[in-house]
Length: 168
Image 1 (cartoon, rainbow, N blue to C red):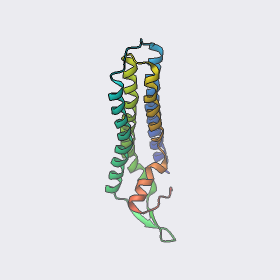
Image 2: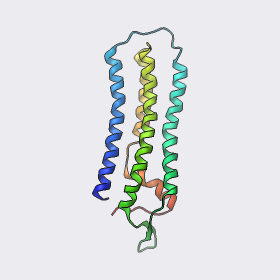
Image 3: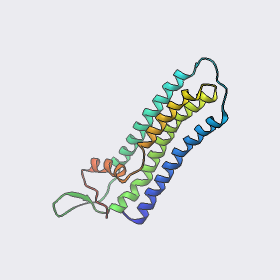
Image 4: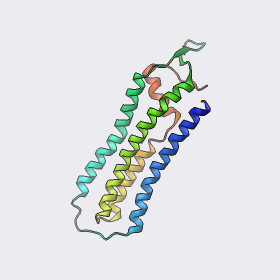
């Protein structure tokens, strides 16, 4: 992978880390604030349903968006000595894919963060911290699946083109 492509991938990883860290800040605010507890939880069920829908969307939508982009993009292919299809310019492929991958990753991370925000709202409105913690845990689980790797960037392209990616 070219130095430029490596820097681009590292930038996406830094964004991922920053978006993960923001949910820990939210939780820290709740722990430090020590809010008073309210009565019965009238909003827990509706907010949990919205959070669940957001968690599903955080996984499905970015993946579909990125796959559609990859299917529309055309790259120069070549054949190796065994006749297998490979990408002629692997570094250019990565450089072309990373901006769209970054967009899809940020979308998924924002949707995952919205799950934590639902828990934050519940606790801020007076529910015990223990009610909000599961929302944060689901958020972190979804965010963990979004860690940017070369494989997660290339796999949809290889599936769409039936070609093998071999870094230069």
